[in-house]
Length: 470
Image (cartoon, rainbow, N blue to C red; front, side, top):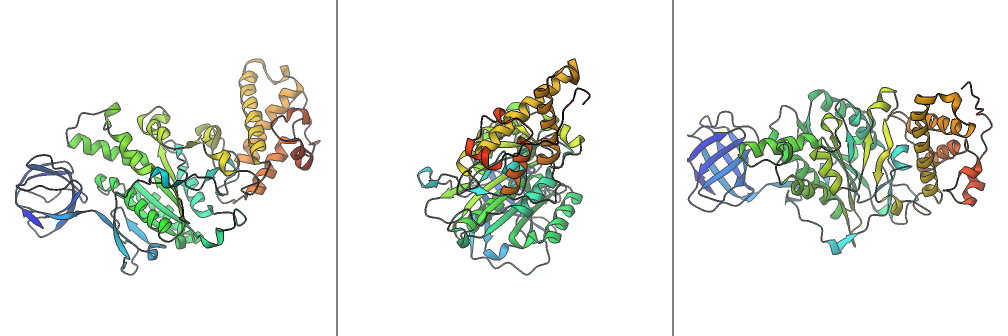
């Protein structure tokens, strides 16, 4: 352990100190103030005789007389299966008044990338209970599927619903009895009100028993937000690959994380990239998202659902733009659907799950899943186009066929997407609702589903009569 009293400058969350021996990058530092208070930090830059240290608890009270101790190790997360059911702060310290955590081991939070040769291709269905996701943008074990939202939209309600309901279907495979399901919930920069809402829901529904919650609040140091997702993912990797759990990691809000990166970059006087964000933000985000996956020979898996709020609802903003490059699709939360009262307001047309085709079908969900999804997409897209046309020529100018597609689009939002935040639909129920909607259309319009599936599930809907007055 090396100790110095050589602080030369304090800038925002950064402390600069002179050293006469090499110091490792990411090395953990303890800074003791004049009144004996100890703050933790991490080495950001050690390329010269002056070391840049980012402090996790803020720089208030630190001055040139404070002593700096370099501990000679990087930040580690104490991991154990007993973390399930616990609530920790953004630095990994318990805040739930529970017993002390006795770890099995302490692991470096940076983690190691999964060797591409050792990766197992994700192709097993995770049931979230949300029809717009399960039916149209299926989540697969080992996938990273972000939720793109906007300020003021109910993405937190959707995140809580997924955390409560997510499970592996009992008949999804022969080995499912051997693997349990766990949720790691990492919150970054959320308000105290949101934190209370999260905790009330976790405790009320019993979801906390199979979850580990990391809470970084809005009034906590921004620098801590750069650590929180890494602590969460280190815990997830331990539960998945050492204990055989199927782990779902929900990270919210990645926009707050990226803002912390920008703040640190400004304090370091780095040359900014697009919109002031660091040029290395793509690499930094990839180091988090790429920690999802499966490993050959291991029972467990790590699946990620990062949530981000797009500034000004701009999908070309650097945060959603870079996230979209790295991840395998996106779930879009729509402001117009939310204003109509649709819960959850997921717009399936711009949403996408690139691994969906590998996670559905006979033995995984149901044999008709792919065809139903494709047919609903086509019908809803046509209905959306016709809505634009109605605004110009009026509904009475449309044909009977076009009116059916307009009705389909309305009912799709009201019956398929709309389900509330407390309704848990299994995949059979979701697909049956889909067939009820497709039965509004003539059989000869169903050109994306197999004939045998039409014979089995199609029931002609005689209750919908379309007239020009509609």
